[in-house]
Length: 90
Image (cartoon, rainbow, N blue to C red; front, side):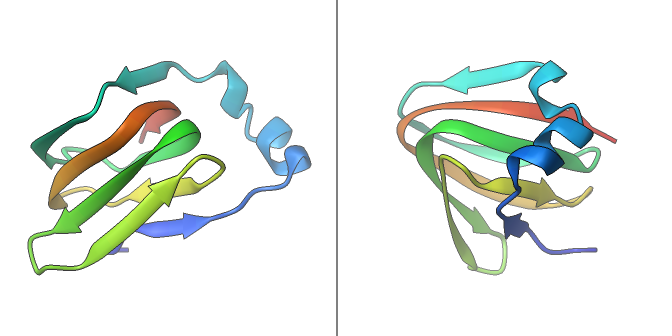
């Protein structure tokens, strides 16, 4: 997998994956470059962000989205409103 994947999970899937036991990351409105050293899965609790990849693809990510960022991805994060997410690196 070499693309950002955004999907919706049911409450049952969230429970099965034990996502609510994962650590929480939070960030105020800001903009910064990021490179993924490992694959990250995350569930956005609140907020909104636009992630732009090196090749110019834009991904609008918001509360309720379950997102997978592939290892090796280089991108830019633009946090539009205070964001909180459960996250896990694999």
